[in-house]
Image (cartoon, rainbow, N blue to C red; front, side):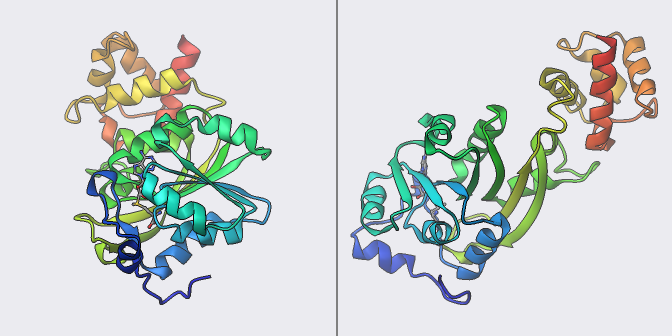
Length: 284
Ligand code: SAM
């Protein structure tokens, strides 16, 4: 276990192996042990847990995860890093040298012998949302995700109604689970320093909404509601080809959901969208 106030010398580790960080692979290594500790604590790992990590890099987070969980499967695209990791990680870590976007995580979990997994990762920022939604949209048995993302993405995930950051990403994440902020992380916690601020977000995945509302209905409504932020919800819903509603039926739907006639989509809470989708399903 790394002491909390220690700075991890990623520059030295890289130099020892004759490597340089690859910007195109989003290689900004975490060097702040305090943040590392917050990530592992937020994941709430138990000794019978199976963890999937994307992009282990130099394996600093991997080592902590391996200590707290039963097994870690980690997917790294960079062959040089994967080779180094194979020689250094504990025996309960499996390294897969592959592109995460070409990896069947469902199969990995199915073959692991565990019934579910947790995803814990300092994600490569250029593919943050594809990775998160590959897990959520495919209904993989992943119950918790603790991920480092760009702060701007975290803000959109966690935004409140009527704020600038509130929109499709906020509602899409809410459809699949409950997101919360673990920590804000400044650039000096990484080597090399990224140009952007970062944040660690925890998503507790849940089937509660998914089991009751059809995905297509929920997303058709939310997409329509945010298609034009300045229009009223009624006009947005009536303009959607996918929903195929008249202005009158859109107004009826809004009233049935207990919402004001002239409300705008951006003012609606997640629960309001759920109610709208429910009323829409009943009508269909
Ligand atoms: N986990 C390390 C840490 O916290 O210091 C490294 C995190 S770094 C932000 C992102 C890592 O993801 C790098 O190791 C990078 O090589 C890897 N990576 C980038 N693209 C990837 C992809 N498509 N599939 C798998 N790994 C990828």
